[in-house]
Length: 116
Image (cartoon, rainbow, N blue to C red; front, side, top):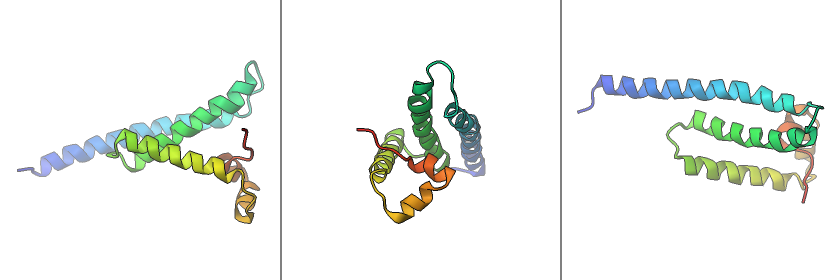
């Protein structure tokens, strides 16, 4: 029989996991945003590819933060499908998307260009 102690241990474990994920996100998001403004050596790679890596990792960590018991494969699949959807939306000039892209947060989350 599972008692209140087992529940508290599981709750404590989930809270510790969420705190760690939140701390990594708190470091990763400014790193990714700051990398977008970098102008030194390898700026092209850092401004585009590295920022893209940070974007995907941030989504994976965000999903893990919200649903810590979700298996990693399902998390990765959700992020893959979501980011593929965002890429397809970049081809669209639908008014609500264009309006969202008029704001910095919209440009960051939705992107502005699609490269074949």
